[in-house]
Length: 471
Ligand SMILES: Cc1cc2nc3c(=O)[nH]c(=O)nc-3n(C[C@H](O)[C@H](O)[C@H](O)COP(=O)(O)OP(=O)(O)OC[C@H]3O[C@@H](n4cnc5c(N)ncnc54)[C@H](O)[C@@H]3O)c2cc1C
Image (tube, rainbow, N blue to C red):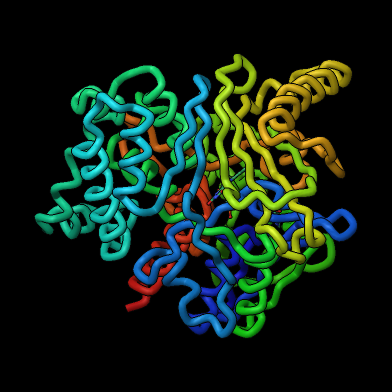
């Protein structure tokens, strides 16, 4: 069985490893010079900057990334961050999200003394544990037949989860008496980075998983370069042939076309966002792919800053709330102090990202584009320097949705995956199977796939389907 993977983001790499494990002959084509996509990196001198993703979660033995990497000869080095994230609210409150439940409750009680936090957060952790169990034990996600739905809801423990799809996270805050402005600001801050939407838009089932995520946050040694180097080594050891700087421009029948070669396949897995898929096909094949992808809505864009500072900051992940019309909040990732794959001793690299509307950036004239980029950069950097008493910085580089489109090929610079929104029909989200025979897809626009862990969960779900179809 010859399998081709188009795209070497986390979805493509995980799919390549799983296909190799199934005994297939695997070739992975990546357009860029390195793997990683939105979780890639770039170097400047002896500094290495993560371009997008910086945190890793879902690495415990029963969770998707844990299951993928547990038998690696050389597993990626991961360091648990405790606190997982530090939050700076716009009214000056500062909260550390510790992995220990009691320590996190103490932070909430200190900052919001007259509220009863425990019932809400106990529920969050209870649902979160059950939901991981669901992902672990129910492999056919999203459902494609009544028998698959039955497989889930015949288990009483999992059936308990269903009602949490019918309420949104904001409703649950109200029920628990936690609906107040600064609490909502905190909750929305966490949800935006983990579920890509706000409390009134996120079903509580998804919201609970997203709100629990900072309790198990890991930093990869060597940043994303260290993480993907470990994945790449495992791919090579498993016999996966990796072709970098190789853009797939067309797929027709059982052939994939790049600038240099035409490769035949028995099966092909696209690790591309929805908006990129139809362009690879022509005629009736294109129409079939378009049918699945046309209804897909917009996603977020990202504005990013990359620079280095002299420092030794131990709380690596921090979210600062400005409540400014252009920047509601921004997320800071410092590199692990003294991690020399990232920066020379005494220095740290910094990646800052904030959510922006991707469309706006494509409609600007060149001078308005430069102006907008500079004004966001100044706004964030001035706040950052004051907050962390930083005088000296090296290599200031900014990224916009146009930059993401250029380096990851993601159309319109849409990143971060598709949010699963309250009221949305779970069956309306396209799955890993397409209308074309032996053409599959993975990635952060495929349910249940956001963030590295979600994308790997999606790749595992496809692996399960492929194996099942061969029995
Ligand atoms: C600013 C930012 C911060 C984030 N932070 C986090 C975080 O801290 N933790 C987390 O878990 N997630 C985070 N995410 C989300 C996470 O990075 C992505 O959801 C995930 O990396 C997407 O992986 P993917 O495999 O779906 O797609 P991609 O990463 O987009 O990979 C697709 C790959 O396909 C390649 N490609 C495209 N077209 C072709 C073609 N025609 N031929 C060959 N190759 C092609 C691209 O070059 C790319 O490498 C963040 C995202 C952003 C933008």
